[in-house]
Amino acid sequence: MPEPIQPPPPQTGDGLVVVDSCTTTWAFDTDRGRFTRLPRGLALSNSSADWRPYASMHVDREAGTVEVALDSAGTQLLRSDIHTGGPCPDCGHPGT
Ligand SMILES: [Zn+2]
Image 1 (tube, rainbow, N blue to C red):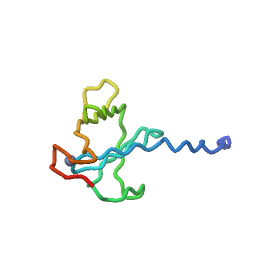
Image 2: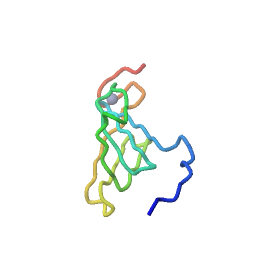
Image 3: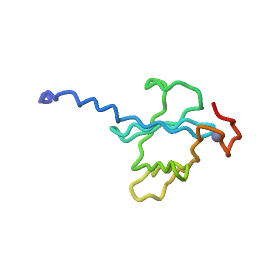
Image 4: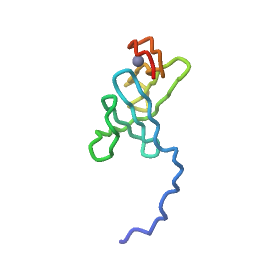
């Protein structure tokens, strides 16, 4: 049975959330519920990125942390500090 033709999803521009930690760039594809981690400075490309599903994510820019729940129960959590624009107290980067 053929699939009904779906209209393309609207382009909101909000589907990708990128958070930099001191060593890693976290990219969240919020539309598809998946994320990937890349070494800092590497360009994000869909073909090379190792995307993993996640249940929920929370970015606390005041506290400078990002928290990712891999399952809906929240028992598998990934946490990371966010690299501040500089000077960064975590890695000592003087800023741009
Ligand atoms: Zn840093």
